[in-house]
Length: 330
Image 1 (spheres, rainbow, N blue to C red):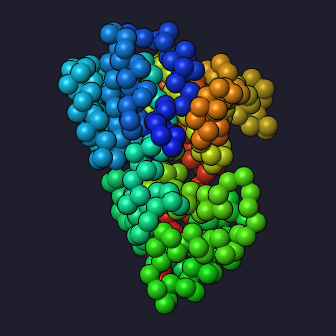
Image 2 (image 1 turned 180 degrees about the vertical axis):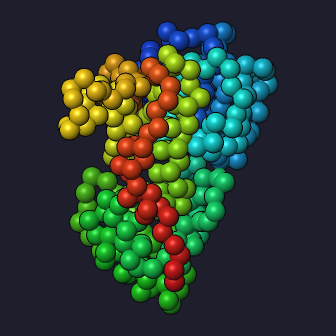
């Protein structure tokens, strides 16, 4: 879950907008939870009073991190770690925590990883520190569970016929990336604005990398380690991510009655200051330069107080985590 892509060059999405938000906080430590190609980290480190702690679950970005170590010395630290484990790192004077939930050019363009429907060969989709690959999902998951993955994580209209055809065909041959695309194309014959395989591949990436739990736990742990006055900023790329982030900030930034059965003077505590409720989206010029950025949304909020238990947040998305924890039952 790193920055977005362009066919020729890596572009950190909404970079100028992010910088305008965090620059008043300059002069401390910033945590880049999705280091990727280092676009955000590099921009933040241009200010010599800033330090960056970068995280990424993908071991392939270690080479990029090594170059940052040479250039920025003690002002830069890197951990090959899932951002859900952000609470495990040593941190001091943290001003902001940044999440960019897209995929980097290097990840998408490496066809051996199977992250894209343009990939060749075995279905993989692992981002790093995984328990299983996509190949196991396609080979071992029941038709009913495949249907749930495609429906809830891909919001795919044709989830049922696609899952049925996968199960039918896999008895006779191993299904690789190209086969999966052929199955999808045979069922979704009408062309839309997006490639017909987009939603299925999104669903499988989310499931293989446990992206729902990663995001929920990452946001909660980011809040827990952030000092009061610090900022959390998140760039999302599809509706499921954005729904989670929107709820996270909105639910705990509004002062309201804790229950309609209680007196009006009993209020839920406010834990965030969400100064801008609507998301920031890319400009026309950015989308023209980097078309995949068109789906990006940036949301942010400042921490006001400690002690939030996030029960409503966790419970609200329990149905997605249930899908994420489906068993291999074939």
